[in-house]
Image (cartoon, rainbow, N blue to C red; front, side):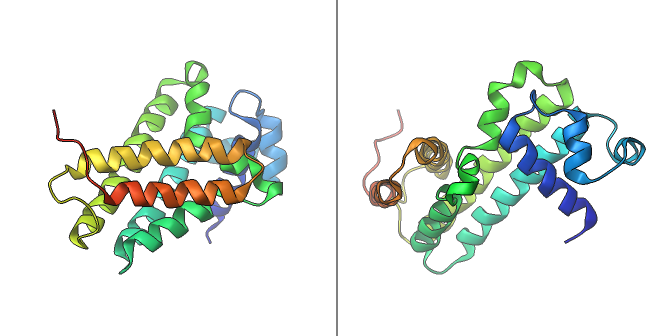
Length: 194
């Protein structure tokens, strides 16, 4: 793992725990163990670092989705990806919520480039879900007449909703149940595009 990746992982965790607004440059300095001059030579501002964190986070989710799309048993790979992403251990419960949605709640406080990075990250995540839908259709696991764009969008909506449910739920078995229900629903008939 590169020094940059390590720093982005640490910063991602910090923004995830505290949120953009509540995270100070001093918090970032301490978390990254950098002096102010070193920090500002790498990142011009908190907003620039946050922009890079958003891109980094989206790339990680996209990579997980693309990996699931490559698996022979796409449904089981999707199930495992959802479980691993949604059921973080108690000490990482804050990671059950979606960093992108947390950031969207604070979007009015973001600078333009960070807000654009957030929009791009959501679009990237959607492309990952669409790639997963394409793979599942190619494996004949989904309705072949339903648009992969619609299926991908639905999967993203379910993923985000389940993330928030997993955050507030104290029963992980319920979350696994809902993931399994999602996979059953995914394979059944879809309404005709209107």
